[in-house]
Image (cartoon, rainbow, N blue to C red; front, side, top):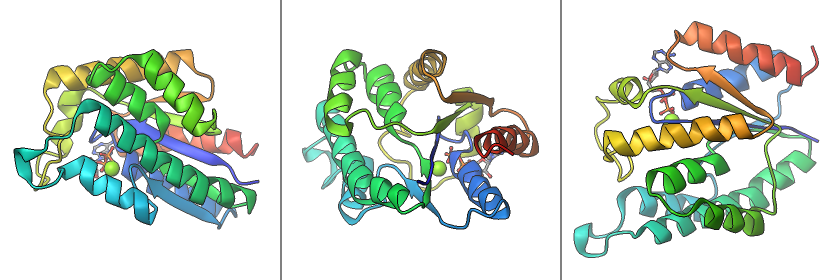
Length: 209
Ligand SMILES: Nc1ncnc2c1ncn2[C@@H]1O[C@H](COP(=O)(O)OP(=O)(O)O)[C@@H](O)[C@H]1O
Ligand SMILES: [Mg+2]
């Protein structure tokens, strides 16, 4: 069986950067069969949901409601889980996931204030409690995180949210990290070298080396 490693955190926390680093060090430890996934996305159907979630369709005429957004995230996630993640793990392939289920608790629960027990139930039914082997939560203040991506050209719906929104997302992430096993909180305001070295420590632990 492969293992499922997930990166979570606010925009600009370094998820994509660290995900690539994890793929690199796994290869250096002899684990060559690794797939990098991103959410929402990483299957043909899930990528369609990604575009819809991020940019909507045809301007302001049909704004995406909070529940439609939540359900599209789960639709995209279950496609990825059943058609890519589970079959790959069974073949011994490792998965490094750029976001997974905690993102919905943090953004749609904390950020959009959808009832967290509703999200929990939805998740339990749709994902059947399938969890990563380890989740790295890259903790950063929205101010620092967003400043790292401020030159990005086209912001999506979520990236345009307010500081209050992102502060609620961060608080939800911090609560999730303290309530759940197999979640490691990394101080993502450190230099990239420090972040990488923290991550490497836990990857070695996972590999028992
Ligand atoms: N620890 C760090 N210190 C400073 N800059 C960083 C750090 N980690 C990532 N970055 C930079 O911040 C930007 C956002 O990183 P990225 O990995 O895309 O974040 P995310 O995927 O979480 O939005 C990139 O330009 C990246 O090079
Ligand atoms: Mg990213």
